[in-house]
Length: 109
Image (cartoon, rainbow, N blue to C red):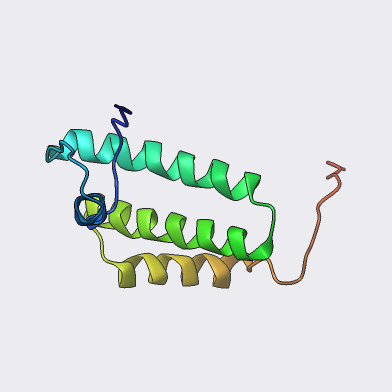
């Protein structure tokens, strides 16, 4: 019997049940949940880096986005509040659309 010991999406137990397999789950407390979300974000980012196609890459980005949405709530904010923070950073420092690659900085002082 494979042992997973990992955070999964909410509907995974129903998916497993529909295949006729038996499983065990438990509900994490807040501290465990936060820790496992961080683990899951790392896992999803590793899967993104291993992706072999744009389709796979987009799927992994969608998974990362779902984990980020959950982490926003864990940190006591809303998606809208995160978006406001993102917009403020774009206003102050720009985004990444212009593909600027910083080579080095000289201190002439």
